[in-house]
Image 1 (tube, rainbow, N blue to C red):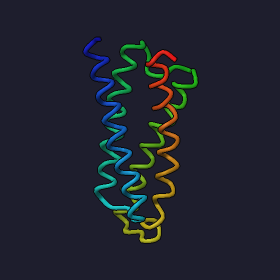
Image 2 (image 1 turned 30 degrees about the vertical axis):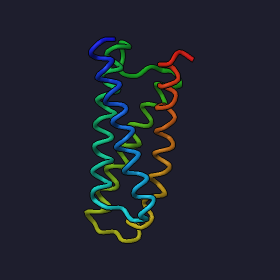
Image 3 (image 1 turned 180 degrees about the vertical axis):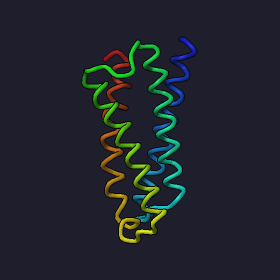
Length: 125
């Protein structure tokens, strides 16, 4: 197994752990907090690192297939999600702080599509 593949697997799985904890902790608490947002950003950084490593193996950053399109969509949604969470907290928007988890769950579900698809593809099914 190549060093790049190991790096990609570690970072993508770390992204899954960090992002999932952030999203579900926010959902359970029904209130967006800074530490959730920190986990969103950390998950995005890890996912981007892992995806970049995978693209080095595959030869291109985006492939125009189901996995490539859903993966790029997920990363862009994660970027928007983390940016919006930061904006909501900086502006102390109490209404959005209390309802932000609805959007977080949506982004997490969309993000899980390429995550699970990549695991299935990697397992050779």
